[in-house]
Length: 263
Ligand code: T3D
Image (cartoon, rainbow, N blue to C red; front, side, top):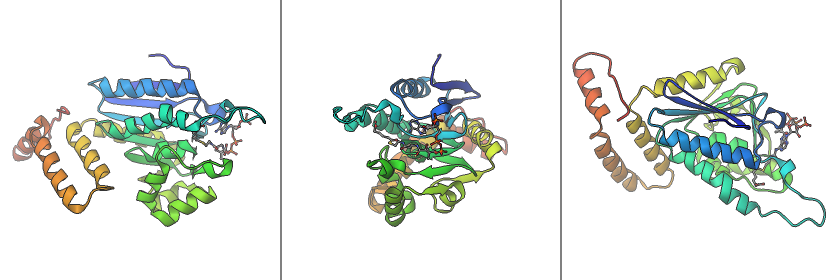
């Protein structure tokens, strides 16, 4: 597959999707959206892929929508941003959340606007210590999209979600870690390597089980305890029927390392 705005490689069971418009801090134009869609589709359908890493080239992770693509000249017809979100951003977030494998994000630099919320939609987020998370939308009269209003409320609580969204302050990676927005802040030079190593390790694990964990944790955001107990029962039923469960128990009993196939 060849792309103009992203890099996409598959190695050791891991797909690595790198946003590659560094001159505009990897902001999204229409072509990049369609390339990311293509890469996510391939990730989902390629049976060799058991984890995905999303990162960026250059000094930024992603600055959200490419604002040079928006004609806001006086008298120009107002763009329909709802259409843009329906066509591009929402399907991307839904795809990341629904992928039946771990999605690891390496936030290599500033993550602003939709860029911040794409990172926060991933399952495990590592961020370079120098990276910043910015809900930049309020500075241009918009609201956080790409799931930001939901993700932030659920991860950092309403007080912080509200202030981050209204003030558009820059949050450091360490602050994001302390607040539970991300998994870990790591040294700049180690961020991609750490994310890829984590993804490669996860790609050797029971992929179906990990996908079920993802489903359960996601559902807990809106379920009652009763609903969640029922869901855990149902998902455990599925997990208990996988080959990897059989292998995990057998390996434990035989005191050897398991060899999981992701099935
Ligand atoms: O429209 C729809 O479809 C609706 C959906 C919207 C989703 C959204 O994401 S809306 C929010 C859009 N994003 C922003 O508002 C962020 C804009 N960028 C910034 O605020 C700053 O660039 C940063 C805080 C991210 C980083 O600041 P700094 O000082 O480190 O870098 P810089 O100098 O501002 O940017 C470097 C270059 O990238 C610069 O280009 P130049 O001058 O070197 O040629 C800058 O124009 C360009 N750039 C950064 N962000 C964007 C961008 N170009 C186009 N679009 C951008 N979003």
